[in-house]
Length: 108
Image: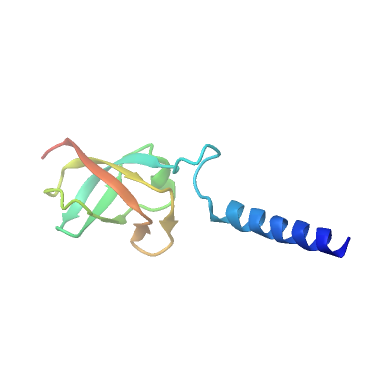
């Protein structure tokens, strides 16, 4: 009986560790969020943007630093669509968590 409890305990611990290691949605895919913003400052590694009117991100911050992982060539005034993991750090200007992509919607 003691051996059975030990085996069950080990299986339970393994199941909990496995469940805690998964991130994203119920089907295992990573969650992503998208919003549009106007570029205020452009750099190769990072950009500063202002979310467009009506954006949910605008209720979190009026300016957001965004990493530019693909070094997309941008200019001040460009409108971009940013896809990220959903996390916004409460700094000023705010910062996004992991950025998946930046696409140009309209160029200045």
